Picture (cartoon, rainbow, N blue to C red):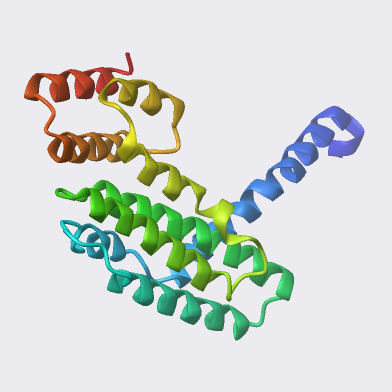
Amino acid sequence: MLVQHSTNLVEDLFGLLVDSVPDLVEHIHKTTARMLLHINGYADKIANAKWEVKDLGLEHNGYVDLLLGEYKHYKTRLAHGGISKEVQNVLLEYGLENVAEILIEGLSRVKRCTDEGRVLMSLDLQVLINGLQHFVPVNVKPKLQTVETFIKAYYLPETEYVHWARAHPEYSRTQIVGLVNLVANMKGWKRKTRLEVLERIESGA
């Protein structure tokens, strides 16, 4: 009856349903990755790691090994979940996105850090990338590029942070404010400078 009386309506409805399927599949995959990769508590572990180091050794922080262990368990769960290899690979990629998000969130909560501590963040990231590469068929480094960019932002001059915040909408306002507060502490910004930068970031000006 619908086809006879409202052909256009049926075609539009069918078109909307079909068009929405990829978005729904993506949402299901991302949600599955978040549920099966148990790393929600790691932001605090990263934030509370020792970043006020004076001498940089060759040792990375312990949370890196724990994260790699969680990812290994995640891959095992997927392998025994009765799903196709193709879907497993998609879920492994979304797992990498989750790892990147947790790293950025954790690093944005760091309160005190030395220059050596900042270098240690880069070392941790490199060890993590090398370790994760054993578990996934894709190149890991581009998936964690947002973390590297966030760490490198510690090097920016104070005049650049407002522009940088505008140019990087992938980071939340809270994460950028955390970054600015840490850099202000590290580099001894004047209180007025820090407040002005934060105000301009908060207002989006």
